[in-house]
Image (cartoon, rainbow, N blue to C red; front, side):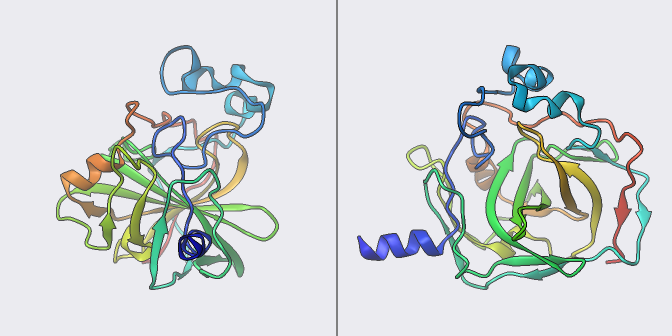
Length: 247
């Protein structure tokens, strides 16, 4: 038992939520429940609860369609991911122990990895193209600001960095290395956006990797939401710039 507790504290803790394998996305406290269909679907999120108003009124919402990106020599990310394995277990808490040390650095600011979740199909599109799956690696700075790495997934060879997949008995469990969820080519698109689930808070730095990773059909199916599609439709750009890195 002590060993198990130690592993939980040292690993990335993830639990399934209302939106399937979209971990840590459900609002806390007494906020209303939301879904991806019908009266509680995305087009109604802003009316479900006063705390969700930004879903309707926000001007920097995510996801978006990536197009007409401008090259930026200053856009960069430093990945500092531990080579050890993430042991992702069913749990209501998605915090990561500082002992893991998985982090990214953007403009000299460190954001620690604390949450991994998936959306099926992809939430972002690239020049109108959707993908079977999109991984979100959510990072948080000490001041509470968020930076998300988005990675598109296409069907192909199995990702060998993933050694244990979610299943019906443990839908929120997987075993992988953080680096296994990144493409070898580290080019990306950068824009200012929001959370893609209520309360849709803005001020999130998005870095969407330009190239996808591959997973087998079995791996992709394991990350699909058991309740159906869990992707928010693309949102208006509202004049925001999309930057493109030089890699």
